Image (cartoon, rainbow, N blue to C red; front, side, top):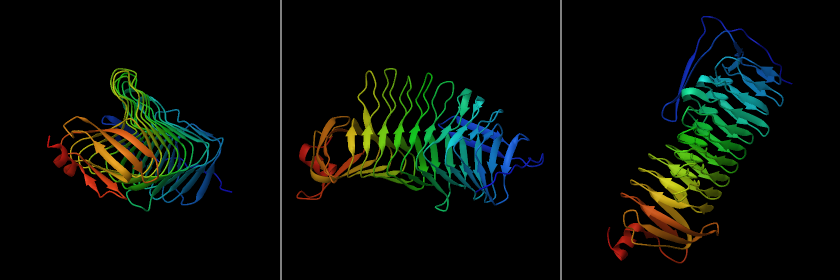
Length: 370
């Protein structure tokens, strides 16, 4: 059995953590005397209430159990881990404190994180323009892993926009749990999972973008790294106004995602068609399985590669024209999707049997150039 120990912060010991999320979403946090610090390199158990911020450092392990509740009285993130430590959230509530800065429930930099069923991690809403994701993770190398096995993770927001449920840069494994982007008060809904770099897998769980009057939040947004998705549910947030709903999956920069299974639903809107997948710049999406509801939109030099049987795409391939992608994915799921291309974006169809690989360039030769 782990035991819980307390330590009092030194006036000479301070840390400033600055988290930049969602464009202008920023959390500035410093240690004060109102803190509990675990930094002895041992293992500890937390199963009660704490009204102070908790810091886990220097290779220390902290397990947060069912019944625990960490919600600082002063503005700040509930639990912060660093320096090769390990945080196991087996249950309980980690609630960031609101105010001029909206704080998150758990921040981890170069620290192992594992979240289990029964855990709840929430970010606060700020009274200005700055807030943090509910769970912020920077791993830096494969040595540090963020593992989501269950639990509920809910983003906060600002006076206008919702913020991330999870911001992750590093190794990620998700097999369960519910992740929700924060709702926007007058602007955009928050992204459920923002993946900024590294390598990861998603085999289960539920991700839903936040609601927003201007646009709904994305369920999964990749701005870097690569993810393999074999299962789970991804739903874009609804737009309560006339703008588009959130995407189930959106990729940008040089990010890559391989989708082998799962359910992907574009967010609803009163006037815009739902988009289940959207890609920008040089990003790449590989589809071989899964169920999709909504359009696919490609921009820049992004590439969509579809693997399956009897795949074909019909349409003019003109700028902004609707093309129909039909056939069966490699997992046997039939598809009938609208694909819209802009700029130099392209689609590659990999028919395993009997057709040879077909590319947009080859189809352009058949239908004529734009």
